[in-house]
Length: 455
Ligand code: ADQ
Image (cartoon, rainbow, N blue to C red):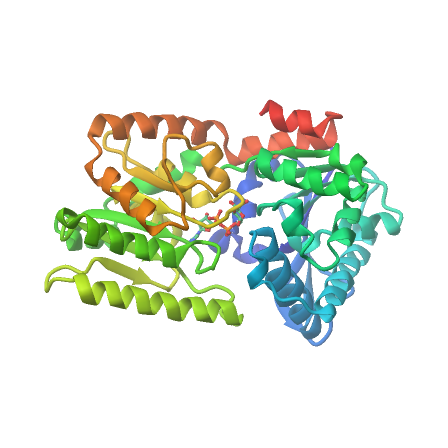
């Protein structure tokens, strides 16, 4: 089998893989166990200048080639065009986006620099799989250097309707770069349709034919085992004891403005004010470690959340009960799995999300004898698959409050029925299945859109 070259913005240090194994590394684990592979991308470190030659390492049959980013490139490519322009636009948030010509120039420069550093390492029969919005232009740059290998691309985040996407300066250049890709994977059929529409209206009908939906999954069995093993661990026992028999609702997100945290907090507040019978009966634990703390929009969000959590706790708390527990530090993954299993309600209400793996993790973590209820945003990709969830409009705190009220009162047989439907999907469409389906489309099947629908 040919070698698989995985290209991602961020490639963790192979020596630390066990500890911080990123989501993508987990999703690709099965594929990488079976064939030669190379990871290529940013090391996560900065240097005065972007390196031209990557630092190489090898662990088993997997090679790693990682580059440090120069300060200027970090600022314009990563913080600028990727995080301040593309991230909000792709999540339908034109009003939050910040555009600067220097950011676009930096984005082009880094995509070209990555291609130039990767090209000499390639073998003629490699299969190249590029991940996510940081690297939209890289396939085109590789082609310009003469690379003939198959190139696939997967977008982990949503793709908005054309009218939103074209608010991005240089949207046309981003779309044109997709001509160089053999298979373009999206999380949902809606995202795939949006991208096809944008490509066709900009005269790239050929690329539109190669777009398909490949919803990502998790290692469901692994996560379920992790969660049940944790049931007797110290942190989990401490939390259980502290609840004193109250129901737990849990939210787990990076602290990001796409995750709908202010509306979620308001929705929980509305539950307590509109349905007072739940006061003192439920505790909401939100874990949201700070991310991208050096970007202004993220600092403002943090202040807003600090204030609204404080206000609701101040108004509603009793001497022996605070309605919201809010943690902005990271919590270890096994502990989170144990917390999820204990929760009566999982609250996953992003304003937009490509998939949202927390929704699937919450389902996988449940105890099959007494499962909890998932309250899920209709605007997360996961909503397409999780029809057993209580679907809500994440912008509407009253809708969230009403769903939480239903979840609190839901009889055991309905909980079980809804959960079983979701669990069957989470177990069937795992990370390994996702990976196999995308690679089959990239390496074999001619019609990517058809391969996407077949799944
Ligand atoms: P993210 O935006 O990072 O991913 P998500 O899908 O929820 O969002 O994945 C996050 C992962 O990190 C999950 O495995 C989760 O358990 C973990 N995580 C989240 N919050 C955490 C916390 N507080 N502490 C510890 N771990 C935490 C992007 C897209 C998503 C898409 C994924 C995968 O934005 O829509 O589902 O890629 O394609």
